[in-house]
Length: 116
Image 1: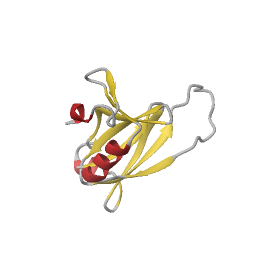
Image 2: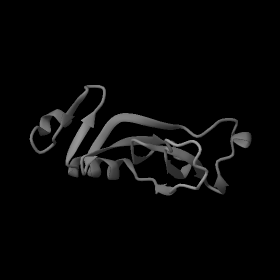
Image 3: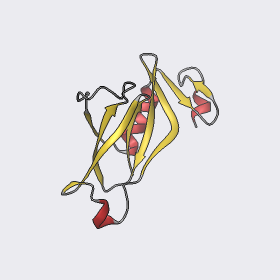
Image 4: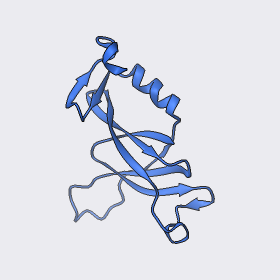
């Protein structure tokens, strides 16, 4: 599995696999992308951890537009994916860690036993 962090207010757009854009017709399904209940706090903003299947190489993310009449193209960011080890490093060095299922915030430097 691969991972990336994404802020609230952003949507996943196109997905790339080896050879180009994800092809639902040839695969018979969409890519497996799952938001986990774990996130980090960065500059007072929560970035949620997403898990994707190994066949996914890159994802496009776009800000959610509140104004549907705005037809201009918004900012698009292509997210490179990270390994589980890299995700753990990011979580360990974050300002804070958020666990949505517990509905609480955990600061690893204050209570490291909670993160085990």
